Length: 438
Image (tube, rainbow, N blue to C red; front, top):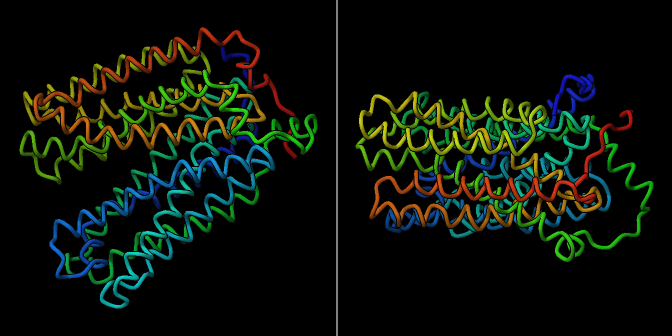
């Protein structure tokens, strides 16, 4: 596709993309900041006479509860988003994330209120999971329906870059707290700072989102269809199975890139090559930064050349860069930083996932279709991947790279399947233009 004829983004488009990306970054920051302080939280929220390994296991169990709540929260919010509008749900998801994050930063510990402390912490984490389940799908749908059709890739890329930028913010905040305060100060009070900060900024993002407008695509559909329509999830499950399958397979590729390349690799390299946490985490920051930047670049490329060509080329680069990272670091640990930065940049191809998903479902069920496919697949594959890779690593030290390569090939197959279906009328879900936003 030649984007030389694509209309430029208006000032309203740019404001929409900025506010959506900012809110997404803050929401993902709120969701993942827990993991950076899990060891401290484990000591503070569970009985002191409990073995340390059990404290940590329970803390990580609470962290995982957020992922388990994602599908239900995402489907419920998407249901209302398809029936009553994207904007309300899009704004509510930030509120639902900000308040529990702020409360977590103010919670009394086990020493003050006993067993109620971990129970309240679990409740707040479940609310966070429900919020994040609606945020990413809702944000992708919202921006895709606001911009011209030939700018959807850029919009999805900017939003995806915002989400991964939230992970980067969390990493930088955790690093800053641990540099500025002693371990005793972190345990005493400083661990609360990232949560309180995230909660307050989340409330600010919610306030800023009040200036956003309902998407013109949804407004046009509502005028045509009226308020009485079948439950969106029933329509998706009964008649849009191909779109769901493609979206889930592509989400599997996304989880391989994020969970293995970005989240698991630092710990794996500490074990495989005896590298220090400081060394691997510094390289991880570089990888996350290049991922954030390239997510936007890949989106712009898809507007010009299409999902199939860019997606296949990017998937091949992801495979090559992941193998280079694992074999190159093994050959010489000094290669870690540049190879990890390259692998992070190649992981930017995850932008192909929302780009394909928002076009795979018709307007009436788009939010629900994207949310159901993405959240269910992420819950399944995101949960299975660490266990499977860990088991495979016991027999092959390069198993993580093999896994990413195999799943990337599956993603390429899903892209080819999607391209073969693209001529069907139902696949033409996004119009070439959109009405003015007032």
